Image (cartoon, rainbow, N blue to C red):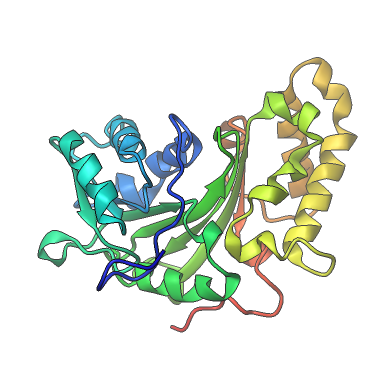
Length: 281
């Protein structure tokens, strides 16, 4: 299907589910771009055929910022019309695409684009990233990634707008894996996330690419620490992540985040080696 006139992008399947994006929401709620924002305006871009994910996002973020506002943006006018009756204080809906149209040309502190670019080609990723980054408030966060249908396996890229100390130009800053740990034994290990990598990386899980090396190393650490499964999958995961760090991988955060099933690294640790996704300054 084609895009609504004037909107950048195209209509995708729009499938979603209750509680599907809880891991992404939790990560946003802890991020300085939200917590320190002067105006905590958040966009749920491409929320799909149901109002559910913007409403859940509002509820979760209000636990840390009572003044947060969420705007759900969809490129399909019919989906926006269906969601409109669920608007309330702090929650609105609008028609649009990657250009992120907001009243008064407001600039959001955070844009979440979950399970959107998965349905695009890899060659389209850099332009979509750049378009969304240009709409953010200085120092704002773009979270772009994907997850499985029940939200137990997911990964995403955290991109920052200009205005962040230490980031020379707008672009990707971090890469995060988030997994339901008690499911990993049946799933075959952490590399189950390979099927839910962001579009920027899903075709890069091949020998010679950094993300492939990461998943192989993570699986090896998971296997190495299998005796800890007697105690819990969480203890096994924490030991595996610590093992990655000890082996020289630039793992971020600490045990508090790892215990949630998360692993975050700088984007440079997994970026495609051909530089295809580098954004212009």
